[in-house]
Amino acid sequence: MPERLSPLDASFLFMEERTTAMTVGGVMTFETGADGAFDVDAFVRLIGERLALVPRYRQKVREVPGRLGLPVWVDDPDFDLSYHVRRSALPAPGSDVALRELVGRLLSRQLDRSRPLWEIYLVEGFEGHRLAVVTKTHHAMVDGLASMDIGAVLLDTTPTPRAVDADDWRPAREPSGLELAASAVVENMLRPRSALDAVARSAADVQQAVSSVRRSLGGLADAVRTARHGRPVGALNAPIGEQRRFGMARTSLFEHRVIRRRHGAGGGSVNDVILAVVAGALRRWLISRGEPIFPDSVVRAMVPVSVRGRRGAAVSGNQISAVFVELPVGIEDPVERLRTIAAQMEARKRFGRSAGTTAVVGLAGLTSPTVHQMGARLSSRLSSRLFNVVVTHVPGPPRPLYAMGARMRDMYPVVPLAHGQAVAIGVTSYDGTVCYGLNADRDALPDVDTLAAAIDDSLAELKEAPAAEAERTSG
View: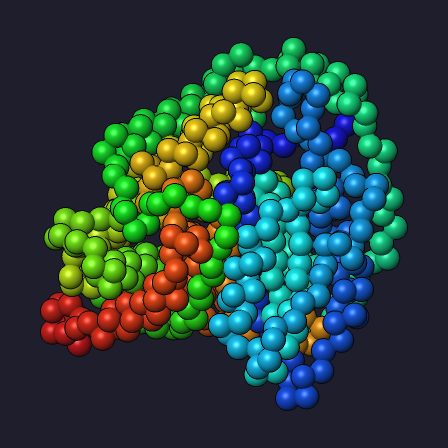
């Protein structure tokens, strides 16, 4: 029978409304050489030949009649590659500004639910002998880490494209509505009746199941406490529409690592440095808008964390949890901001508790799809009480990648907006760079480029900050 969406994957479908397209993806740019030669038609054919590497990309979502069960994935018998892979071009001279404007317009359009939930745009006419590739995938298909699977279709580790086996894909017969309803009824009859049973079903033993339930309930309690004490930040939490803007900041991974080493043990990890850079950028941007900043001012960030490594086997769909981090935008000293964030992250690791959005979704998965949908949309609408901004970091490959011989220069992630969220910040490290992608509401954040520029300024501020006294005396 077709594979049923997990409760978390289904939640991303249920969260989606007119103004909240649940689309993840990326903007990649490639160096095509001085002559600008790049065979786009051959690249499209290569994508088609490699789709067998990612079977989900030829499947669509089917709802179960009467909402007797969560939706399922089925093969699309009318799959049309030319619909999903599209060509576009920038007006001369093909500037970065024009690319960002195009990306904002592409992100504004929701994916067609009657087809496989992804699109790729090949953007020609980009100045500097470059080609841009924009990918869009529904969050129900993949989380930030799994969305790297699109690299199996587009990218190679050498300039010479690798060979793949011949693709003999034939769509499986699409089940009827009656068959989907019947299978859902059978599953409901066998469904565990409690959260403990649900976790124990996949746990190695009862002790692990009890531990998992406790962690979920702890995360749920954290979410409730956060919602009670949280407060919206006017510039970040505003009504949003359907249209988007996109901002980009390309920085150096080496500089992030220098900052981490320069400020000693208190400097934390590269991820902590990234969060500190974002905190400094938000501080500068809020000040530029005339927003009041006090010494105790904070911006609460929801930071998704992949748990794939902890769960072992490779599983499709979303495998994520989340933590809440208070970005201390009221602190003037950049090093103190970094160390405050590092201390928070260390405390999260020590207590081993992820925060509540995933816990809420997991518990909602034990209810009927109708109640599940209501819960997912409610949590989306309450997001400005839970957090002010999403900041997600997905480490990419440390070595260069290629598309039809063209070297990929950088990759900027796209993170979707929830209700009341004016901007979401995605970060990817790749081949010595750290790329920040800012997905923003077009009207609520017309100055997204100002925020992107503030990321460069914030990184420079941390790099130029004096080292700790202990390090200076020991050196």
